[in-house]
Image (cartoon, rainbow, N blue to C red; front, side, top):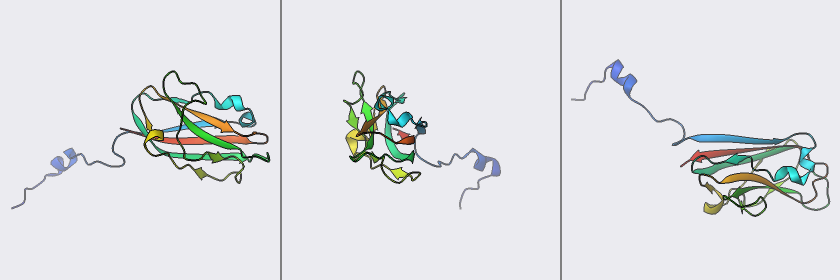
Length: 146
């Protein structure tokens, strides 16, 4: 004989939904012509308040770069005391800022070393190449608490 569950008991049952743990979306925006200045990529935009893994990274820009060389954008993880430009790359390859404008790009996350963020570590953007003509960069990072 199966036990009977009353309506009240059914309301007390907590069913897990969605992701295990807490997810945290973070967005950084470089408006208008701000992406054309390399110094705008060196300020950390997130400091971890607990341990996370990077679950997803996406980028979109309004105007593509026009320089003859490669123009890329990397997400970098910084340990406490580490300056921007000297951290660990979180993506296997940086986003192509010369790619088609207004087109969403999804980053490939580096396994283990690049995807795990410890409490107190920071995330920053890191550009490479000549940024002329790049306009309106938006980066979305989705973190999952561990």
